[in-house]
Image (tube, rainbow, N blue to C red; front, top):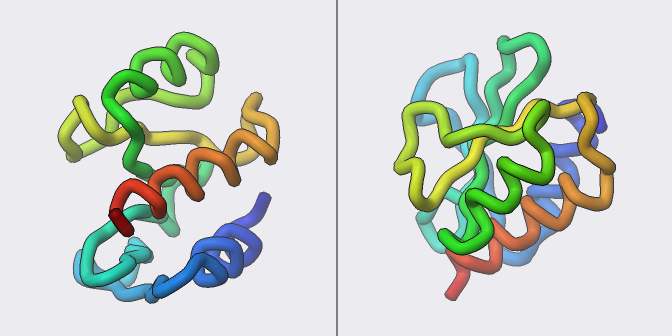
Length: 106
């Protein structure tokens, strides 16, 4: 999944919008004014920060130790950071983003 595909998917979720409150190097995706995804546009490989249920945070890190790690500059209890285009199946990337969106939308 490349940056444009990720952006299109995030914006396809209900009530989603993008902004750049942290400057031109990051895209933030929000719903109802709350962030559910942070995309780093300059890191290599590309990383995203996403929200997850605290019970799933550690399980995701253990299941994908080469791709998912504690949220960079985020609350480690509620956020993970993920490398895109590494060892993570596309369906998992989409699932994690969708879950992050649904947690914020509640």
